[in-house]
Image (tube, rainbow, N blue to C red; front, side, top):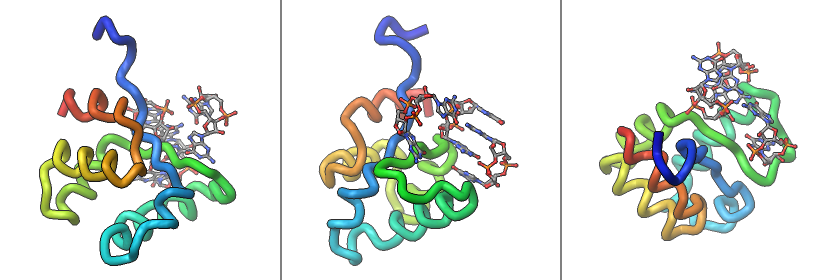
Length: 89
Ligand code: C2E
Ligand code: C2E
Ligand code: C2E
């Protein structure tokens, strides 16, 4: 196990996501909304997603998972801690 502790979760900041321009964040926003609806998880300020979903999103954005993670950290949608969650990919 890592000396930094367990693998952090991928937690999307939904408030920040809603402030970003559609051209950038539209696909991610639709993906997150679909997960919320499948879970019946509304009114959340954040949404924990599966590692596997980040892989799918990377395909959608035509990036590697670590490139997409950097972008989402830059947008303020993911915490920098999320880098450790994709190291294991
Ligand atoms: P499913 O994948 O068959 O999961 C059924 C139920 O198992 C989920 O119901 C949830 O209670 C539990 N579950 C499965 N995996 C996890 C997990 O990693 N963590 C936690 N805490 N619980 C888990 P739920 O939440 O009502 O979701 C219903 C269905 O919606 C899921 O069926 C799945 O098809 C879809 N779904 C929900 N959230 C996600 C997601 O983050 N990513 C993807 N790809 N699908 C999701
Ligand atoms: P945590 O995972 O660190 O989450 C902290 C808080 O962030 C949660 O408090 C909740 O307010 C919010 N949060 C995180 N992910 C989501 C999400 O996907 N949807 C929504 N609506 N809110 C989210 P909460 O609910 O009081 O949970 C406290 C702690 O209880 C969690 O800390 C976690 O350790 C545990 N927990 C809650 N639900 C689950 C679960 O489905 N699976 C597991 N393994 N632990 C859970
Ligand atoms: P979590 O609930 O703390 O689950 C951590 C990890 O345990 C998951 O990472 C997954 O590898 C495993 N796990 C937990 N429950 C199940 C399960 O029912 N089936 C299987 N096959 N594996 C399970 P993962 O997939 O990266 O998910 C990260 C976080 O995303 C979860 O943390 C949870 O907060 C959220 N999540 C993922 N899928 C679902 C879902 O279907 N429903 C809900 N409500 N939350 C989910």
